[in-house]
Image (cartoon, rainbow, N blue to C red):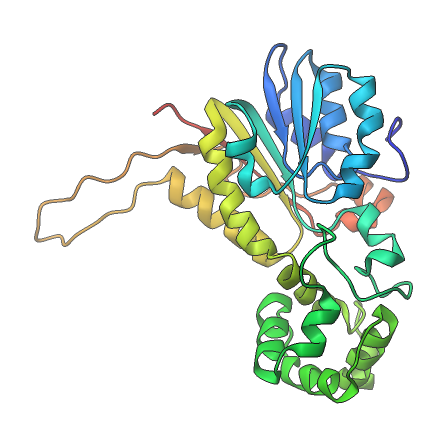
Length: 305
């Protein structure tokens, strides 16, 4: 997308903008600012204002060019999107693009990818426990549990044993080689690299991505005005499951009590589903941006209290 520093391709951009339907005078939140693709498209679609939130200080620094371009209409805040209800005024729409950004993934020094060697970091906020800290100090049970649960990796115990035997582990290439050896030759014949799920698990753990998402969905519901829309782009089943469960829980009433007893009052739904099933990228977008292939977009609209 033109006007953005570096290479950044916002996923399902046209679908997100169609879902939010930006209008003049409205306020929107881009809770995962990243390269600014969604924020820029919202600002170009209407004479509105956008608050961009990101916990990566490098993303906030890169975004200053857009702040200057959209003088008075774009504000950037360093922080977690789970706190958007504390950082923003009541808003007409929220977009969340989950997971790691292209800038983070493509910078070896950030340690998110095994495609190029770099320090085993993975911290989106550049602070706190790094992936290297975790793999070098966690016990076998904890390490295996994280890899199994957050990476959905069936060979988690074997991989954990291999990591512990090879400590200290400080680089992305070193970790990828350890995991590949632990998986065995057969894993190399699969479509994805044998270390993919382990790297995903470590990244999610280090950044508490699922906890951040749970808190962020609640914060988005709190900050949205009636008729405001929440658009969430997820990239793996753990994220999409949480979004689906949240949307379902707040858009449908659940029968309570026994059929032999008076029915308890059911909570009033606070969301209306705009997408009954997740939207996925078209074949043309996947051909242009292979990283979009696993994306799913879910959209819901806040109901009046």
